[in-house]
Image (cartoon, rainbow over all chains, first blue to last red; front, side, top):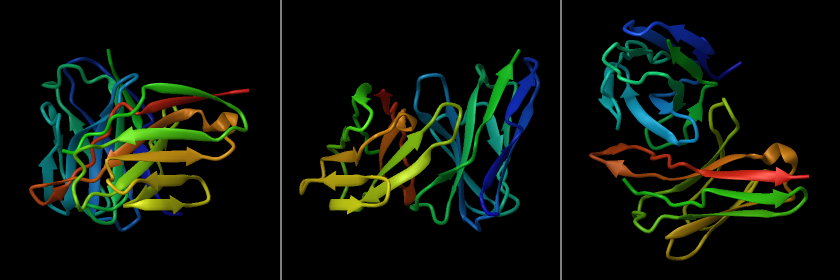
Length: 112
Length: 112
């Protein structure tokens, strides 16, 4: 059963704590992406990776960090430097950087 | 990044054909036009992609005029389950990397 998974679906953290969101795909896709979505808004790109061991900042990378040590995994860390981390986070992957992106189910992060 | 402009929202009655427009005046020669559908608290789902003229699949049709500065997504005989946000994206190459820009999308509400 191929696809892209994100865990957990809901996540609660105290202010000032770092938190890591998981994203795994078994589609053998080279490219992976992280987006943030706020209520009533579109998606904003945080980071993207075209290939293993490489990643680039998106439009709103401040306060976030990523790693791409394995092709199938692209975890996102929301650091304490992110001023307003409460949001819906979406991970996506594509075969190549210019191909159609396929999205995971999302993780809703709430910082208390 | 090539930007897109869509109406914020639209209503339609069940069983009707729905046409959703998108403007992309700065589309580049190599850009494709891609449409996604998103339900609340879920990741966007790919609907259709095209470059010019008309593309049709089992879900929708995409009409692109010769100047490619706009496109229209057509959903035949919508049902209540088609209520969602629809995003129009234009593929863009920035420094050799392709990054898709999601706008706020078009909220389509299907009325019984």
